[in-house]
Image (cartoon, rainbow, N blue to C red; front, side, top):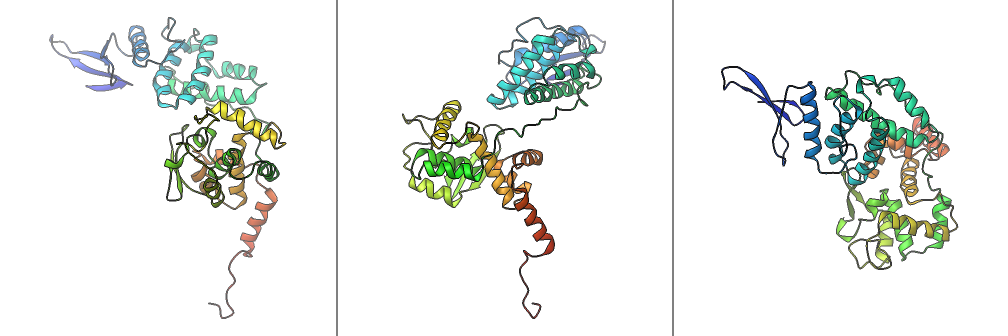
Length: 354
């Protein structure tokens, strides 16, 4: 028996004196399903798509309607049931929404007619919101790449479609003046100052900071498994953060809780933290995520390499690190670079040359 396509296996049946290939859909935890015909035939492809749909219990509006072989619906359904279960729940919800809206508009159309020209036109309609448009294109690129790998498409119509150029630098990066204003309003020992310190000195996302507590701190190191990526990180506690933790009462499993001692929801924390920012006289664009970017900026200004920064933030690519450190002080970093080249930051040798 050999594997033909994802979850599909075949064997040669010689029972009646005539060799005939038999195909089965086999996925762990699911009932084995016999597939009619051969790969590429309409009856096989339709049975394969419905086997995929039945193998993953997550709801899908694409699978709720009749899916015809050779359509975008068939491609999207197969891609979602193979890919979404491997993602973090929050990420899967976002991707599912993008794909199901794409299917609702174009799902019934034949795959054979999908060209780069069509994708360019769809992207142009979304150009008023570049960030959302690029998120859409990212999913379409992943979808069509999967389609080529699995034999749905002979060539990738989205491969060379460029992402839209974004004028915005994205989420605002807190300045040192912003940080000072917050610290001046919220003293050490209070929950607001603790929240700022956890975000700023661990450089983690809101969702990961909200799960931090005493059990995650061992021997001066906070251990984090990032909710979005699943990456495990060990981050030494900054002395300033350690001092704030020591000065702040904590009677719960997590450092940050609501007024009722319950864990914050991500949305609830954002609303609460925004109010604390407004109390400090900060503008609305100062957000919790902006402190993660401020942490990356500080690391860059301290002369840390992109690899070192990624070891703390957990970013998967150096491109993401570069985007997070755009607000770094260019002049300060340039001085560091020239000093390194000129040797002025090297230890002086003694007069005898040793």
